[in-house]
Image 1 (tube, rainbow, N blue to C red):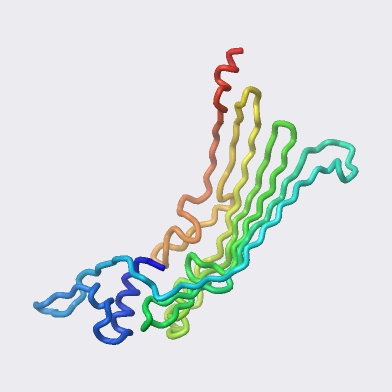
Image 2: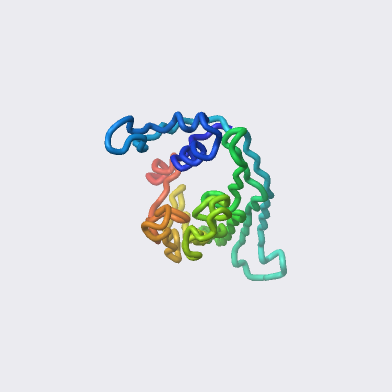
Length: 227
């Protein structure tokens, strides 16, 4: 596996691995002056990992329901339900053969659980869709850091909040391939982390709740409208 190293990875490996390791070569220091040896810049280049291993379970189910098939005499449309998700069981890596093995499961961008649910109701030319995306809380720090420094931060700042974003859209299909739609994303207006306490775009972007309105026109439908 090939990946660019973060500045923190470079510093940690330079000091923690045996002297003369390649990570120290990526650090530039002041040669002379008041503070000789002070770090000035880093060279962040892709490197070959010793290994990376991941293991998990993916699941998905989709069900289409027509109430008339269940004995309902009145036609109220059709429903489609979908559920998909992932349970991350293992995500470990090692920067070099001399470096410690790092457990990345449950840290930022690697939640242990991720689930998406989607429900659609279609009645004649009307379509209503509801979706929700969720993943559990993740750590602001590596698991190694939390294990070695359990008091690195107060408990409320050790983890990112769970993601819980809901979207709704209503669409109506007119004749001749023209449809109108409107919706709202991030219905509950979930916000990212407070400024100064981590990534300001995680677990959701800073855009917040927003509404939209639009239309689509299928190719060839413009000429059909003249008819």
